[in-house]
Image (tube, rainbow, N blue to C red):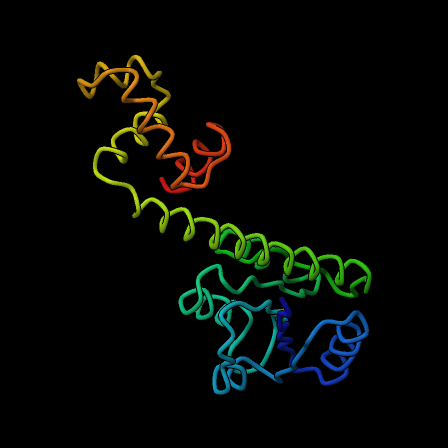
Length: 200
């Protein structure tokens, strides 16, 4: 999936060089001269990566990060570019939710690697979210009795223990177990347990 990276820096030269660097690596990148500009034209992407400077006139990086996390949570990972004097602030910002900070003057390769890691993490989150939604949908197909068998299997109970708990025969448990596996599209018990843990 093609993701956007938004670069927020009041220094035109730094912003332009960052955009050029990202675009040369095939990243879709857009620049903003400051936090106010960025929020005034807040892009509608469901997920995007943000690179911001710390010291900027008007809204500084810390305020921008706080507002963006309020609005987007962790759907928009943030990388902060910081001067040596701002490292303490950058560490505080990591505690509040940014994914990384890069000190100036930055190494272009390090920046590109950080952005790639950021974008990959977003793809992983996407895939996990899709897998969770698919498992949730399959779970909705189970009958109440099948759901009881599913919950018992996830809890690690054997067929005999499930039979005792539900007051049915072990043979009936096997029939329900086969139905649960088919409806949940699980090819093994471990795959079923993984789905159960994903849905917790």
